[in-house]
Every structure is written in C-alpha cells, then in structure tokens.
Image: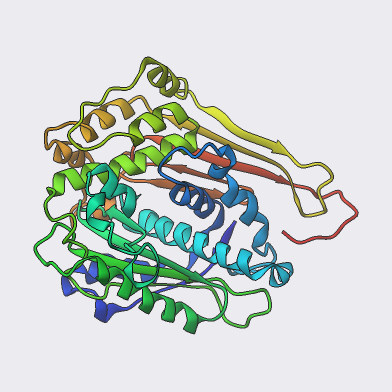
Length: 383
C-alpha cells in the first residue's frame, strides 16, 4: 500500500558536506505504509522484555486500519476524526517514529537505532542523567543511530495530525530538546536530526508531509564523551539487534542480550542459542483471524520472521571487549562512491505489496506482514 507524501529538509541547517547525502530525502514522493508499520512496531517497542507479547504487534494491529485506502496520498480515514484526542496523539507520536526511521533506513541506508536511555544503561552511564528530567526541555533525544558511513547520529521524532505549521513548531521544540544533552564539540556524536510527519485528517486540504532538520553541528556529546566511538557503535547495533530479536519472537535471546553492560563477558545460554537457530528457516510469530469483519475490514493477519545464522558472528562482535566494530562495519560501510550501489547484503531492504510488506535488515533478520481484506460483508467500512 503505497501512498503519496512530500518530504522536505531545511537545507540551511545542514553542513555543506552533508547536503548531498540528505538531499536524497527531498526526492521521495511515496511511502510504503505496510513496511513503515513494521518499522513502527520495531523501533517503538521497549528494548527490554516487558511481558506483553502483543506490544510487538500493536503498532500495525491498531494503525493499519487507521489510514484511508481510497486516497492516493497518506491520510487518515474520515472515521478517525472522531477518535479520542489521546489516541490521536499516540498515533502521531508512534507514526512519527516509524516514518522517520523507515525513511532514513530505506533511503539513506542508516544501519539502525537504539533508545538513548538504553544506550546510557548499556554503557553504564545512567548516573550522569539522574538530574535530568525525562520530559520537556530536559529530555534526551529519542534515539541514537548509525548512518550508512558509520557516523553516530542523534534523532528526535515528531508527529502531528493538526497542521503543517504545528509540525514545524514541534520540530523547533525538538531542536531545543536535542541541544539540552550537550554542547561539547569534541564528543563522538557529530550530527543531530529532528524529523517529523504531518498526517492529514480525511477532509484536510493539506497533503502529508515529512520534514527533517539538523540545527547545528556540535551536539549530544558531554555525557558519552568518555566512551569510544567504537563502543558506542557496538551499543547502537546491540540495541537494534535486541529489538529485532524481540520482534522475531526470540524473547529469551533478546532478554539475555538486553542485560549486557559494557565490559562484561557475554555468552548465550543453550536455550537462547537453540531458540535463535529455530528461526533459520522462518517461523510464524503471530496469526489472528477476525470474526465477522466488516466489508473492507481486515479479516486475517499474519506476521512471520527469519533469522540468518550470521547473527551469532555479529553478536560476538558487538559484545567483544576488543574494538572490532570496524571489522563488522567494513562489510557494510558506504562511501560516496558506493552509496548508490549498495547491494542486498549491505543494507536494509523493503518490499511492499497491496496487502503485505516485507523487510530484511542489515543484521540478517527478515520480517513479513500479510493480511487479507474482507470483501463479502454487508457492512461498508473503509480501511
């Protein structure tokens, strides 16, 4: 289900040597909704086991029917206008995460993201944020990620259903939140992003818009400046792998890896090793049939995953005490010359169908979402 969307960037906010890289975003004119929802489920799930199995799937279970199927552009169904404002806010926030992360990964070949709070936990730095508020102007960025070139990037995500003006206002506020983390130019993080999406209501005359801005060059570094770039890169990939293990259904393995703290020895239990190996040929993670669906409503939904055996080599690298991250990155790292020619094994891959979406990740995970739409009910309800 591809929908039209306009993507803009604040060119003046990006350093000149980043223009060519981020200008690619402004060429996007469509977004794959099914793949975007898989990314929403992936990056919004907690990086630690919560015990709520459906937490991995709620994003597309709830939001798949929220988008208008009849409109050519990305917009909400007319019924969504009457939804409780609290639910509207949640959709805006979560799709803000899913759309920006998917776009950065699918277009700019970002390697992955980790929640900033979890990053500090796994680097044993949480004592440095005890005095910082988790909300408002004192909050840390949403995510820390790695771009295609191995650079460490901070990302703050925004979303709104009101107006384009409100999106730009939220992004401006996000810039203030980003700057609060640090003003130390000597730290490992050299690039910060604030990105967001405006999703119009059904009768809104404006069209969907995604916008990115990089307010300045020196940010986010004071707290993690004592940690090497190699160890931060490992932590980012660890966080991305943990989320993928959870989404795949390998909860034991994900839980063990989520408890890792820098400097420790790590080894999977036999139970977790066998669990990961059981996904080598693929496995259905979730299947639900909906009784008496309305016409046009979803009647059957399936989610499946697969894990490549190379994941064990990746996990050995990202838990090693040696700075071996560049040995891992050398297989994937992009250059200006190779960026437009990255092959299937070097980056994430997304494939979209009308009623299905599939993504393959840089770390060897595959996720597929397939659903059926009921055409035989006497009811008439748009999806």
